[in-house]
Amino acid sequence: MPTLKTRADPPLHQFIVFSIVEKDVVLEKIVNCNNCGIAHRIIDICKSVIMDNVESSKSVMTIEDMAIMLPESVSTILQTYEKDLPDYEHAHFILLHEVRGDFIVLSSEIAEEKKLGKVLTYRGEGKFIIEPYSIDGMLK
Image (tube, rainbow, N blue to C red):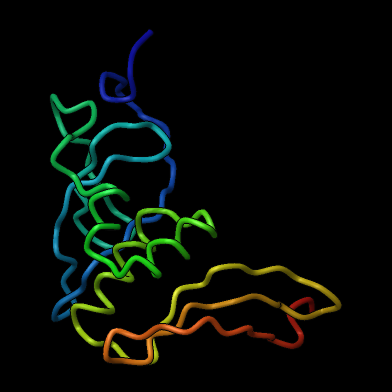
C-alpha cells in the first residue's frame, strides 16, 4: 500500500502546530504530523510540505523535550489536562519571552449557552495561575 508521500494526491488534513511569526513571516520548522506520522516542513500559516525521504524525524521537539524546559508544576498541569506538543511549546515561549497575560486553554465545554473552562495564565516572573472562564452567548 502506498504511503502518503508516494501518492500523487495525498489527502488534505489538518494538525495544530505552534508557530512563531516575526514581521509577518512564519519561522519555518519541522514537525511530525500527529495524523499521518510523516515529517512536514511548516512554511506558513496553514501550509506545510511533506518532507522527501523522511517518514518521521527524530530531530523534532517532543513533549518530553519541552517538559524538561518548563517548571515541574507547569509540565504536570499540561500532562494532567492531556495537552499536546503545541501547548508545551506555547508555555515555553511564554516563559522565554515573559509574555504576561498570555494563556493556554486547559479545558472548555458548552453549557447553558455559555462556553466554560479553565486557562493557565502567565502572571510574570515564572508564575502561572489557573483561572476559570465563562463566555456568554456561545450558541446564538
